[in-house]
Length: 354
Image (cartoon, rainbow, N blue to C red; front, side, top):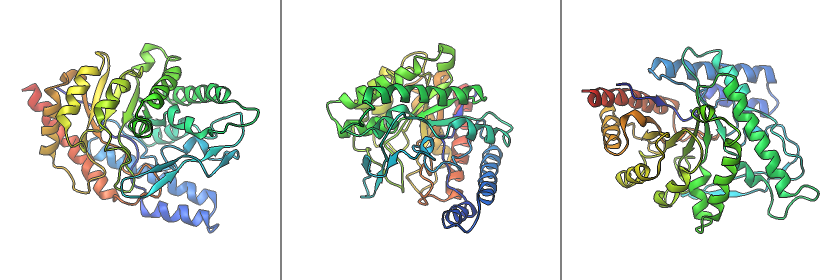
C-alpha cells in the first residue's frame, strides 16, 4: 500500500533570498539580480524536497510576498487599511482595501507553476488563494460606481482563471488555501460569514467538471504565522460540516497541532463525502520540535481508524512561512519535519498493508 503525502505550500526563504529582497527594496540591486535569487531558492527547495523522497513538490512559495496577496502584486487600486487579522501572540496582519474597480488579478499562479516545473522531476502541486479570502478586499462602505455584486462577479471570474491556468499548465493538484474558514466563526459565531465564504468558493468550483474538481483541493488550518495561530480556539467541529460542503475532491486538514485529534477525526468521518480524499496534517509548523517518523506513523494509524486508507493521505498542518518575512521556523527545521512526514507515512503504509 502507498499512502500519498504532500507539502502544503510555503517554506522559509533562504538567507540569500531574504537579503536580496531587502537590497531590491532599498534600490541596491536590480530586478534581474533579485530574479536570479528567486530562481535559486525555487531550485533548491524542489531539489531538497525530491532528495527527501517527497513524491509531490511545490516551489515553496519562494516568489510570493505571501500566500494571500500574490494576485495583488502590481495593483494600483489598493489602500493599506483593510481587514486586520489578530494572532494569539498579539501580532497582527493587515489586508489591503480595494479602492476602485474592476478587480483583476495582477499575478496568476500559473507563472509560479511554470517556473517550478522547469526544476522538478516529480509532480508539482500549486497553492492558490481561495476567493473567499480575497472577498475581504471589498470595503464595508462600498466603492462608488462599483457595487459589491459586480466585484464578486469579477472575483469569481479571476479565481476561476487562476485555478484553470494552473490545471492547464500541468499542476497535479491545485490547492485552495482556506484559512479564513475557521477564523470566520470567530468573527461571526452565527456562521453567516462562513456560509457566504462556502457559497462563493462553490460559485467558482461549479465552473469545473467533476474530473477537474478531483484535482482541486481545499486546505484548512487555524492560521500559522510567526509560530502563532489566529483561530485554534475555535471548535473545529463548528467548521467541518461546512468545510466538506465545498465541492472539491481533496481536503488538507490541519490535525497535528489539534489538542483533541480523535474528536476531529470522528467529525471528518461523519461529514466528509465518499468521493473526497482526506490528507491529514501529521507535522506542526508552529511547534519548533521536529516530529519523529514513529510519531507520524502513529498519527496516520490513528487516522486510519476513522478514514479508510484508500481515501487517506498526509500533509503538513500548514505552510512553514506563508508570509515572506516570517522567520520563526528555520529552513532546516522545516525540511526535517518533511523528512519525518515522508518516512513516517511510509512506515504507516507498510503496517496497514501488512
